[in-house]
Amino acid sequence: MENKEYERIGDINLDVEAASSDDRLAQNEKANSAQRGGEAVIRCVNLKKSYGDVRALDGISFEIPKGKIIGLLGPNGSGKTTFIKIVAGLLKGDSGSVTVMGNEIGVKTKSLVAYLPERNSIPEHFTVGEAVDFFADFFLDFDRERAEEMLSALRVEKKYKIKSLSKGTKEKVQLVMVMARRAKLYILDEPISGVDPAARDYIISTIIRNFSPDSSVIISTHLISDIEKIMDGFIFLKYGKIASIGTPEGLMKSLGKTVDEYFREVFRC
Amino acid sequence: MLGKLLKHDMRSMSKVAAPMFIASGIVSVICCAMLYFTFGFFEEDIHTVFGAIMLTGSFYLIGLGAIFVMWAIVSFLAIARYYKSLFTDEGYLNMVLPIKSVTLFSAKLLSTFIWIAFASGVAVLGTLISVVLPTLLYDSSMVAGLIDTAKVLLGLGEDKTALVITIGIVKLAESLVSSVESIIIIITAVTVGATLINRHKVFGSIIFYFVITLAEEIFSGVATLVFESVLPNNLDISAFMSSLFALILSAGISVGMYFLSLFILEKKFNIE
Image (cartoon, rainbow over all chains, first blue to last red; front, side, top):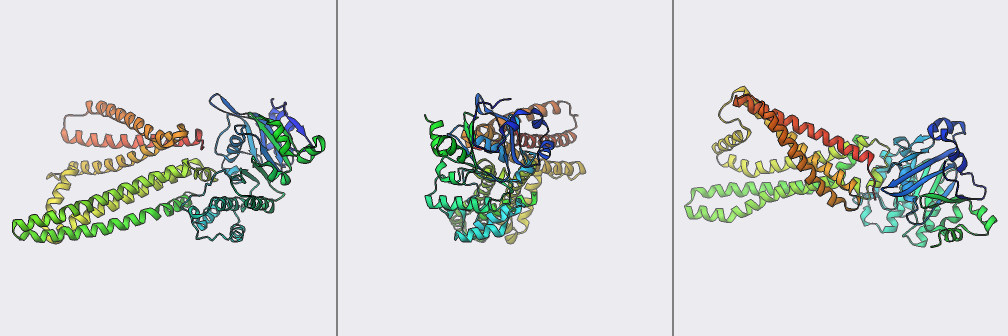
């Protein structure tokens, strides 16, 4: 198996070795998940994906347990978005496996994963109320009351059209829709890019408020310093491989660096 | 889930289509009144008739044209809605819904069909109101001429034997299935083009439309030639069999296109 070249910092239970050392686990994910107490929210084994000759993911393996907020970090082209798309069910991997709560990616996992894309995916012609109806119709774990509370806190009325909202408000509305779900895994792709610092604080506090110990969050971002304080762990991706994996505390203890500083060092051009 | 998808799709499209349909209705009524009053001048001298036709004729034609432009716009928007909902940013939401690809694709396809059928119905109704109604109101005997024209178009003519009526029905069914085939070819071209040529989705869709249409024309042409070479000499039976073959061919191509689109969506989809 691959994935032995990464650096591991701190006592983080991301179980990279467990995920990558046993081929049988990839073949019988459900049985193993039960055997391991079913604690892994996401498990990725030797996942590969290429676009033509370009290898976007080159055999990555890791496992994320419940109750963790993980930063998925790396420069452009490192494979973050490809990985996220595969987990969200937007793309299929070439080989290897990914499971969410022991289920292969498919209809079942789509009901367990709440995905916040980088772009506004809510149709522009929708009103905010129609967006709420849409999420409530398709996602059984969508908490309408929770969504309405968050929207009223934002002073966004249901009659407002999505296209009439500012970019920042659109991002917040989309975040509300995603975080109002009682999902097992939240995948947030660049949730704080392109918004002002006040909006960033709102987004981060919304993530923390709605996060439950029963679920996990994967956040992909370039703005590491903003989310460092809420991260339980980080995964650095480089050229489709895991370059480093660890915890902010472990990093500070062993190298005396923040994740942001360490990122700049690892990915220095 | 299919019902929920259709509900949201219908609600979205109705926002733009409903005003178009209302406008078509208003234009149809105006055209109807215009033609009816123009008929009234027919009893006057030739100069008055000529003047009336000159005055109202161009407005009438613009009105009729507007009804078909509105049909074209709604049909285009229905196809554009399909494209937008799967291949633009909206795809990030629609493609992560916890439903099977076949349900999602079928709902989007059905919604496109429904709106184009609805728009076609409104255009036909608008034409009837603009052309047939004023004729009927002015002189009902003039309608007989229109009915004769329709009979000829359907292949019924003067002959009302069971076979000829059956041919007419098959031809009607053939034109309906052929319309469905035309729509599904466009949908397939959009699906294949926007998926395989990810960075130039619209361009890819147009290119694949021409490629698929050309392939379909060649395939249909060859299949029809082969089939017609084995047909009996009896003209009526040959006409019936030809229409039936065209109907089956269109239906077969439509089913093929449906599964091709579904395959591409399931196996090759990658939104950027």
